[in-house]
Each structure stands twice: as structure tokens, then as C-alpha cells.
Length: 166
Image (cartoon, rainbow, N blue to C red):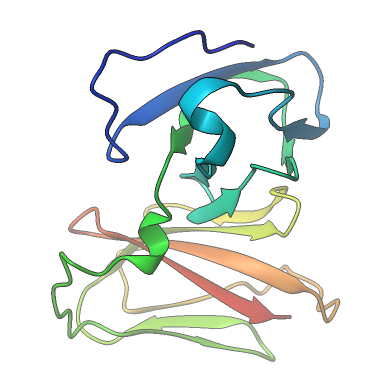
């Protein structure tokens, strides 16, 4: 994949959606082979919208796991680390709490619509839809004492991602 150019003037607020075609399930990397011109001193970040992470790929590629598929809405190139920015911060008093043993996800105010649980490689470990409750248990998961990412979608379609050791 090659990105050849941008319209001038360049702005650090530019974002570039990245589509990838994954031929087989497995681990993959997205990185930068070479830069020139004004980008030699500009950090480049890759946002993984599925895992809600932003990684500086200027010097090191981003590793991820994906199933065989055409993925057009997971990755975005950007030139600022937006996870560190809170200029548009809005207070939200709905708290989502994760408890271990057994794994239990609780929303304090809004009903949970669905949950997805991933390991750090992006592999989906558990999924439950049409929950419509304030609390749900991931009873079929076996504890491995590893970091997991829990993507909670509320009935308002707001998505919250929590990390925990389980």
C-alpha cells in the first residue's frame, strides 16, 4: 500500500481511512517503509477503531490479528494522537464496571445492548447480542490471567471499551 500525496496546505488534523484485504486469519503488521519531504519529521499514528487504540507507527509497525476479510472501517492514519486530546470532553455519568471471577459487566444507568471480548491480538473471544440488561456475565470464558478488551455497546449505540486482566 502506498500513499503518494496530499493536497496543500498540509494540516495535522487530516485523517486517512485505510482499507486492508486479509487473505487468511492471522497476525499482520501495518508500518511505514519510507517517508520523504515534510513527513521526515512528522509522527504518523495508526488508529485501530475496533480496539480503540492509537499507535505511533513512525518507527515501529502496528501488529494486529484479523480474520480473513475485507476491512474498510477499522484503521485510520492520523498525525496527532487523539487519545491524548480531551478538547471535546463531555462528562458522562453512566459508569460501566467490569468485575472478575466470574466476569461480570455492569452499566450503572443505561441498558447494555451487546458485548464483545477480545484478547490483545484482536481475536474475538466472546460475543453476546440482544442483552437489554444492566448486567451481563461472560460465563463461558475461562480465566487465563491475560489482558482482555471488553467492548460494551449500550442501547444508545454508545460504545465503551474496558481493559482488565482475566
